Length: 154
Image (cartoon, rainbow, N blue to C red; front, side, top):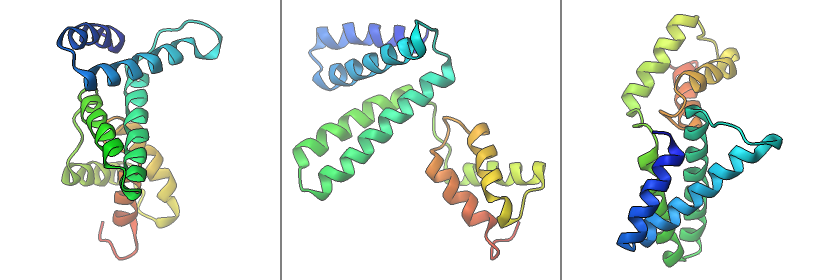
């Protein structure tokens, strides 16, 4: 079942249960799906990796808003963002633990022979491709920086 079908099914359930958090989150997700489908001129089919990227973007937007609301002392709005983050996260694949992420990046370094700080960008790009949906880009970049630094041991 694709993401659009899951969203529609869960919307029906959320409406019946009067679950405001789920309904608010699902409506935002449905809107993002429709925008993605109609982007670039005409209707198109959305691939699974596009769905994951779209949900990741929505979660990141809510995390950014959450940080802003918390810094401004708007706990009422921060709570709504936190609820939506938790709800939307169910549509993402399980994230890698820090140890598993580090192991995966070390494996990529071993396979490609990239160990130099000069090749840091190349390694980040490869890691982002291979670990798409399993770790955030920022976390991947931080881990690569730590592993590839001159003081790190390969």
